Length: 627
Image 1: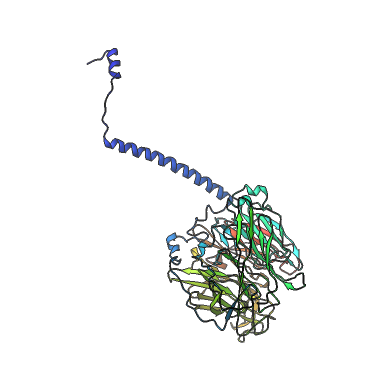
Image 2: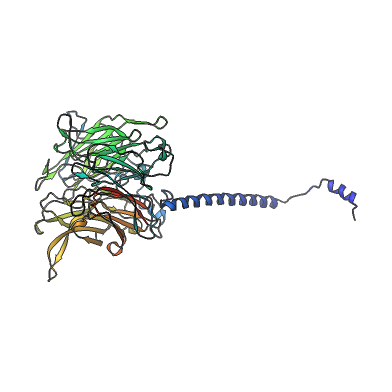
């Protein structure tokens, strides 16, 4: 039938009932979901690539989770699950079973009470679940980053050209006979939390700059310096402490703006007594908020009590060793109000741990051990590991302050112990290396041994021990290893990298026998499993290694070793092959005793006020980009 125009309009006006099949609704729902998904994915991709572009321009890690663990990338073909299998169970109550104290005894005193105790008067409550529980801050906030002392770099780096380029430098000063930065002298690199940033005592331009990373660097000239990592701009005026600082500072791991740093020298107090202090610095007001120390008559070593060790702050309790041979446990009672922009501490009891042992005395004497801690403490759960100047690794229960065991390391040990979890073996290992201060009877005059040990941290059992020939001289120079070892990860997960000063380089005669030794520096990579040398790099006497080795990793787990020496060189190596793969070398023209720290592709290190030949030169702080 053919409709007329009028009839057609009438028919078009009628309501028509249609029936839709269920598959139509399914198709419609899928279509809507697909469109929404594409929009969301596109938005996320844009955000990601904008952030990626922004970060790649700075060569900084996109996030702390760019690798299986922050700063702990897996190697090629490794996944995060592989890395996680190396970690210990968080739920297992691991117990130290070691009992051999090697003749050492410990005692505890609270404040200046006359009573001397065998242990703390109450449980200290300082146990950690694992190292990840220490802080959620972004950066390197203490020596070796945290309680395991195992990492001087935050995040990962992008390495293509394998080159080093100075991005900025700053001249610093001198106080008395000391200039620049010294041992251990590692800078702190921190990206402050957004809620803390407005309260900081930084210039206004940085309060509004959430992405900036602050460099915090105490120096031997008595000042604490502050810089923007990328630009080198001074974020705040230097804070004058007035005494040389040689060691590495620590930030409050809760993210609160308080800095802790110790004096490396003694000075006279109002009564004319030579004393040394530890300082808490308010980073809101930029001033010293509290100092403690002085002459401690509980110490066996009374003539010297400086503070070179980098402390840990656990459950708002400061753990600070001293060269007087005491470890202080101080309840801080920190109060921080970000809204008011105020911070304070009202320290409570000072619980003091000391030790004594056979052949120990209060000073450096031939054939004697002397009291003191220059090593920074490492902590696992409620167990503290620390090396003393008499040459023992001590394991201490932080809850009871009882000495659990001690291991003879063979000589004065300033290097910090480094901890490594081994989930496969269901145990914890500690690595450490000693110095050389005693003549060895089987070596020519002036030579002795530095000893490297791998120890089962839960039993005190020595897994392996390796001696390295080093210079002794008149006993006043500390050769051997003052540098803290690096426990490899990624593509060097089988390696332990150590740096030595005054190393004995053999001189071979015509018969092939060793006739004597020459003085030099040495970098050595040991196989973790048995201590076998995988590679070794020897240098001449001016290129001694006092600074700890810094290893940076790429997202793939490729490892690059940064070795700073006393000839003023910053050397970049492929860490897997060592001396066979020197990538580049940068000459700073002054001795480097300080351990560098890195954030992404940028590292910071300071120099002393001495040129390689011992003459005076201008001390500086450098920022170097790894390209």
